[in-house]
Length: 401
Image (cartoon, rainbow, N blue to C red; front, side):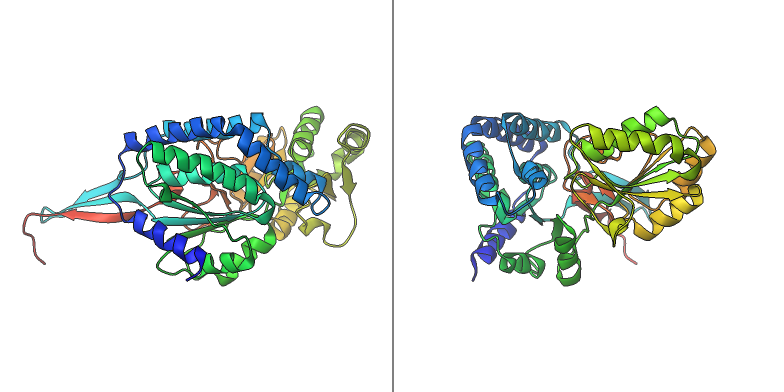
């Protein structure tokens, strides 16, 4: 039996334990945040090891995704505390009805059981996923990419310490040691041991999981996000929004990758956006030609540009090239805004705002497990509620059919 399967066996056993009370879970989450902060030095040392190993192998903008500092660790701890403050989703009565014969039929929320998360080079996913899984009553099996492995291990060490100090089985949070493709394949095919698989990463990882997984899988899609600057846009507002959506943090999935501009406003808008992106730091390349530019998630200081005839052409382009993550329209026309919102088939649709808000923390979820771009079960930022399924509980007094 591989080490990955050993971890899964232990995780499955823990998932069958008596559910922890809300207070027990919240106390443990508060201790996790505390231990995370106390382990700042150890986590930063481990992160420097990851960065050193990654330098020269991944793009500088991806190094930024990987890098931790004291402020980012503090933010991770704050995310855990935010999860602790949220209502417990487990055991909620979602719906109920009474049969004509007196049976009480209730629909109650329950955890999935063992939730496996495969992710790449963002160490903060480690604490976010662990906290959300734990609060939602699940057991977390974390499998980070090799670029972030030492950071993830240091974070999980701190979280496990918190569980032990609260007299809770430390196997509620697990880290897969093996970062090769073999461990990913094991998680994808561990029928009976993994109740839900969530891949969080690039196009290759998502495709591999959706094509090969034999366990239930929620697709968290890549983010080819669009911003359409309409003919009725406020130019200064549009410049501010596009700048934020592209340059505030280009290596994340909610960053804009394609800019669509109405032809009637292009003469005024384009010189300003070219000046902004070309003459202020960080300089950003605007691409208007080239193979596959409209189907590329750059995750870098690059953005594709297309001039369109109107909202209909903008919608047609988005329909053809979107990954159904986040799209935004900049316009002062309520009619065009309403039409855009009604026709866009993406998890998040914005009017006069940056796509960078598609995030669990910004949506009031504490933090997030990922952004689901599918339509079954979960869509958009996934928080506590999306990590529960449900069952029917029927209470009777001798009724027979």
